[in-house]
Image 1 (cartoon, rainbow, N blue to C red):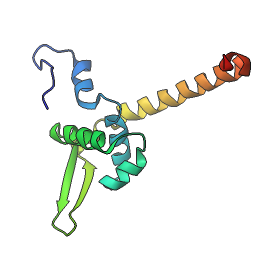
Image 2 (image 1 turned 135 degrees about the horizontal axis):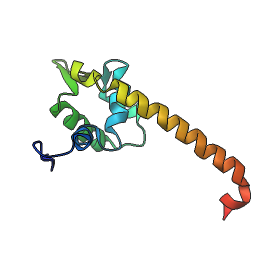
Image 3 (image 1 turned 45 degrees about the vertical axis):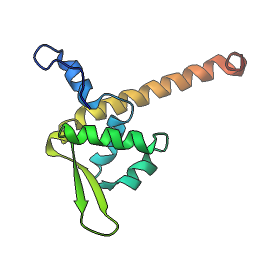
Length: 122
């Protein structure tokens, strides 16, 4: 899966988004910052994401060196994912995104409470 990004002339923000952009990548990395997780755990932690989308996002994160995939030679095979040292450098960015998102949600909820049920029902 190739991405359309020019590594020589592209914007640095665009480079960051090429790695952590997408709906589920930041969420998956946040879950993995807490420690190694198996695929089933990640699937339970992101119930709105399809199994296929989680798989694709994990593959891209692995290809970019953000996470590591560990396969254990067992029957049935066991696979665990963890954030690499390089991936840990995203922690401050994701923490700020989490804080901003919490403040934004609180603001939207407060706006909804101020507008009352009559406007929301329309």
